[in-house]
Amino acid sequence: MIPRYSRPAMTAIWSPETRFRIWFEIEAHATTALAEIGVVPKEAADTVWEKGREAVFDVARIDEIEAVTKHDVIAFLTHLAEIVGPEARFVHQGMTSSDVLDTCLNVQLVRAADILIADVDALLAAIKRRAFEHKLTPTIGRSHGIHAEPVTFGLKLAQAYAEFARNRARLVAAREEVATCAISGAVGTFANIDPQVEEYVARQMGLTPEPVSTQVIPRDRHAMFFAALGVVASSVERLSIEIRHLQRTEVLEAEEFFSEGQKGSSAMPHKRNPVLTENMTGLARMVRAYALPAMENVALWHERDISHSSVERMIGPDATVTLDFALARLTGVIDKLLIYPANMRKNLDRLGGLVHSQRVLLALTQAGVSREDAYRLVQRNAMPVWRGEGDFLTLLKADSDVTAALTPEQIEECFDLGYHFKHVDTIFRRVFGSDA
Image (tube, rainbow, N blue to C red; front, top):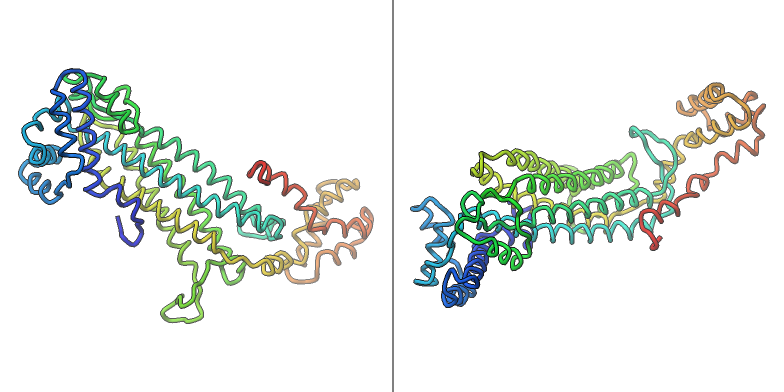
């Protein structure tokens, strides 16, 4: 985790203090369940909770013990025994380290998912507000980076809203995928611990029992989780790149907010650079990069190995913290995005009406001209305009082959900008439902 790209709520999930607190809760709940089925004394379970509930686990002390034991869970249990006393011998009965580690990781991922879902909700609200603000603001649509036909800026944002609504659903599904608990003991057979214990711990921790844990929770669940994060990050990048393109000097249809006192360049005082969206493009690359090792973690040896462990210690915090930061930053960019309708209209008119070429093509075909001839006639008049030699409407009206099929009024009708926006309401209803 890099502090520069971290937010406190998400980083707190991955702190040693939080991890040891979750470990304690797992162990204490398991001890309570064992007491309920008569395996350990109820007084012992009560003492574990009484002495551990308010305890501050000493991270430095646990690290000191681990330096000797070379085992993190044993180090924690040794420190817990220092706090609880003799009754600590009833803790971890029939359990194995993976029961604690895997259940804890899934608790952390569920909590991280909750933050990410809230992040997307905030982003959706910002996108929706700006989409309705510019629902009918005309701008040029581009294919291959080249002017195509008119759209509205609101439609651009509606597309982003629909995409992030899908991403929200992906995060909800990813949360459900990893919300499982394993308290099944060595090789997952429950030989030394009753399945009722797992069911109890799962309920208390907000999880569901893993059907077959094989000592570890299957890593296909985690692969799906991190893959979902990678898709969300890709959507962050897509919208960021759109803004970066629109901020280019030659375009300048939209621009990141530039605050009082902000500096764009150490050398050139005039610069206003899209640094936030460039940053998000880079962060998205990192989040996507974590998906591959998560997928490689799926193939573990037999009932358990720890080749996944080192990977997850890194990608768990890094992927969630980075995506959390990127989503929050994107929300801020959209919320304060400077939008320039006048520049949009200027760019829309830049090609002298060529953006209406398809309407002329269709009008000619409807007037009886073959599609091949119609295309030739329209292109014949379009290419001089492309070279800066006149405007499209004037050239069309001066072309006898075109006017043989269309009246001047019919040609002019093809240049109606509003024609392109007649179904904007339909699209908005599809995206925003009754709010549209």
